[in-house]
Each structure stands twice: as structure tokens, then as C-alpha cells.
Image (tube, rainbow, N blue to C red; front, side, top):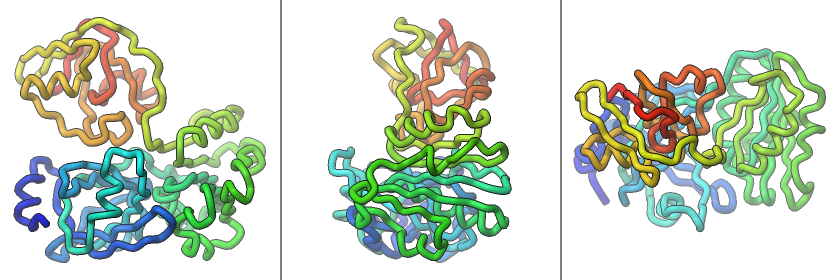
Length: 327
């Protein structure tokens, strides 16, 4: 087990990075554990808002993103929920099988790509571990006196985390395990389009795709989603190489069709802070000064894509022969 000094020295290279200690690890459902994280010296942790996530760098070197799902007013601890994914890349299995209280982890963030907009009423939809960012959202809605309802689905009741906490909200929460109720009845839950009522959803891709269809008649931007993996963006706009000019250094890096911008920059000795490498976490956001990005992330909305002033080089590419980045 690495000590605080070792993790701190390996991890600190960005302004939003720190280290945390695992204070507690609790199994809260089949295949789901929560981690309570604190500063090694017991001090305050950075403030956060509902929908925020953190990057955790594990002792095996893997970095993974987890939504904060605890009390945002507790300045001295964070809580995250981790689903065991046997077919994953090793992060969740490490957390479930090897991580123990007392271990020290690198922490980046918090960052929020899924913020809760002010409203008088909300509809929330969560699938499986997608409940984690929703928990602080309903707490915030309660605090603001807003009306809200939650539709929460999962494979089985025993696999659905935080049911005890959610039971305190009575009939505002509809718990619908698939083995008891079948697929979530999204049209029945949504009802008629409600101007001024945002719909927030987090869960697996098929659920979010079904929800996008169900919300087709709702006002533009009523639906807010957070994805576990990037949405399919189709084929890249161009299939030939392009150049990336680094504004600060004046260097130019060529990106070939089989290499991401992030990989090409790393090969040239230019490190850009990154984490998910799927276009979902926002860690590698980079300012675009010239050129036309081919946006392939799951974070930017249509207006942000049209503005063309930032991109996520882990997945996004170029429509033009040259991109100028603020690097």
C-alpha cells in the first residue's frame, strides 16, 4: 500500500489534483460498494455541486470517474458508488476486491458536466448505478422546494443501491426492478410535455436512447443526460491526416487517421491532462483558436459544438486541414 507522500508525489501535477484516504467501504447492493473519502489530514475537501464527478487514480495506476453521491454540505468527506463490472477494464474489480479503508488515492476535480439547472419541478430517471448523480440532485430539489419525481430501474431489487435512503421520499420515488416490472414505462412516467420541467437521466445507453425517443415532443434542451460511455457519433468527417498547431509553442503535430489527437500529442511529448479517453468526463477540454473541430464527445450541446471554441482531443478530430489549439 502506497503512503500519502508517495501518492502525492506521483499524482500532483495539476491545480485540481489532491489525495484522499478511503475512510470506509460498504456494500450497499449486489455488486455495488460505496467509498467514503476524506483528506489525509482531516481537512476540507473542495466544494462541489449536484451532478459533479471526481477522477480517482487507484494504486494500480488506473484512473476512473465516479459521481459524487453524498451530502454536498459535508465539507470533510466525499461518497462515491462503484458498480462491479466483470467485463470492464479493471478499475471496478480493483475497488471491489483489493481497495480497503486506509488506502490512499489520487483525486482530480470535482468537475461538473451534468449541472442541475434551476427549475420549479424536475423529472429524474436513473438506471442501475446511474442513481449516483441523481441522489444529490433530489436533495438539492428538496432544499429549493421544487417538485420532483424519480423513476429508478435496475435488473433486480437486490442490485439497486440506496433503496433505504430513497424510501424516505415516499411516492415521489418509483422503484421498478426489471424482473418485477419489465422495461421502464417512460411515456407513462413522463406524461405530456411540460415546459419548464427539465428531465435528468443517467444510466445505460439503451435506457438513454429510449428516453431520447420518448422526449422527442418535449421542448428543446428539456432532456439532460449523463452517459457511462460515449454515444455513437458515426464515422469521422475526414479520413485523412490533419495538422494540430500548438499556439503557445509554435509546434505542429500531424494526426494520422488511426491516432487520436491526444495520442499524437503524447507521442510528441505534449501531455494533456486526460482520464476517460471516451469523451465523457471533460478532463481533457482544450480551447480551439482556429480550425473546425469534428466533435465526437458526449458532452457538448449543439450550440457549443457550433461555436467550435473547445474540443475533447481524446475522441474529437478535425474537419479542417489544420487545428490551432491553445497548448
